[in-house]
Image (tube, rainbow, N blue to C red):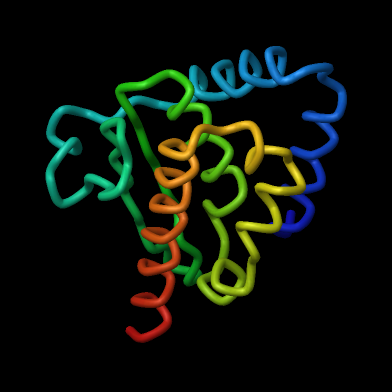
Length: 140
């Protein structure tokens, strides 16, 4: 599935839900499905800067050139946002990651207007970290 297909699937799921209270509950549920990171993985090197909550992100390059991401947070809603980001980006080639317009995607999902400034900044920081890792993979 391409990244745009994953976005369409997420958009369809969000549209089935009514108001933002239901959508927030759904985002929290998505976060519950994330595999937690071990204490050893919750290092300063894996921490995402610019997030109000504690956020860790691990990037693993695969043999086929795609990048796999895993993440975790100490906040329920942020874990859900990580789950959305991973669903969009994980398992994709760096070129596809770099070509994807995350800002437009989050507007399409309605997240841009529904999140606090701090959470929006944290979401942008997560995407920024993923993009930097994709840029490093392209340069390697």
